[in-house]
Length: 156
Image (cartoon, rainbow, N blue to C red):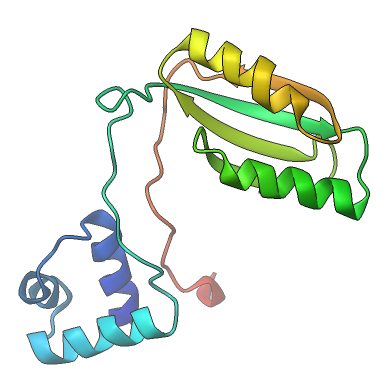
């Protein structure tokens, strides 16, 4: 991956709806080689896909909580079942298994605090192996997902 590929990635993270012509202009290429590079980045899995960023309030998912989960049982089957069930929950928009304690970090998006309480009480706390689930409510977003840095990490 060279500097032009990195600039392509940076521009597409800013605006995934850029036309190929506009993208080519921004990175200093003509459209044809730009499109070849984008297709290569897609084929090799560097670009995994494209999507719209939605306003949670506008679609009824404006209340978000971060939840840390500590497992009581960490045997393979219990953890696998927990992960499978969490992955199926539409309320869980992001889930990470962590090193150390806690074991998992979830980001949950629901309509309001009452919906969250129901989700927490009726669904999350009943998952297999859960010893403790702790809610963390954000006061405000300081920096939203701005995409991944695409600088050459080998030069640092």
